[in-house]
Image 1 (tube, rainbow, N blue to C red):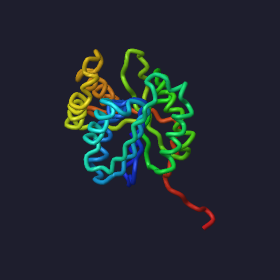
Image 2: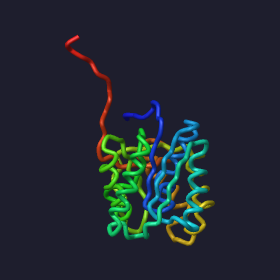
Image 3: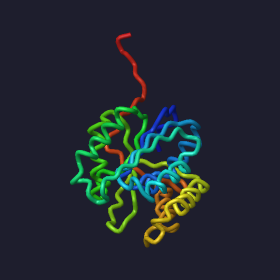
Length: 220
């Protein structure tokens, strides 16, 4: 199995269409990254939920999911479920994010996610971040749109349990949802772990990946 990414990470970007998207899709990866790299810069953008309870939840949650990080979070007020009608505003937000950061890694929704807000945001990312590694996280839901991932971040049992605990602690507004429970989150993580020879894992789609495996000039 090829393992990439053990080198230096100066900063990452995490984006979500809604408050809790980032934590559900990549919370374990964020915990792993931030615990391993104190002071890591994390620029996060969420398109909806600003100005109310959801934003308060998101700020507390991402602070917990990014321990010791230099976290810079923006939560906008685009209406939930209406991203296609607010394309220009979303595009402007992504372009503004690009102007202030040049990350080594981006965590974002998948381009084939069934939710129009998730899918739309994913398709906006390459228009601004053209030369960056984008890992598309997955969110389990009734659409049944989980695919065949191409990248995995193994999670220790402790990290997997902490992810679930933080999701339950910080997003009280979501606890009533039938899919928002420990079994769903750990169940998917266990399946993805099996796929990469780990106990638990988060999985990602990779649309484009440029390798840097070394160079050699035959003319020298």
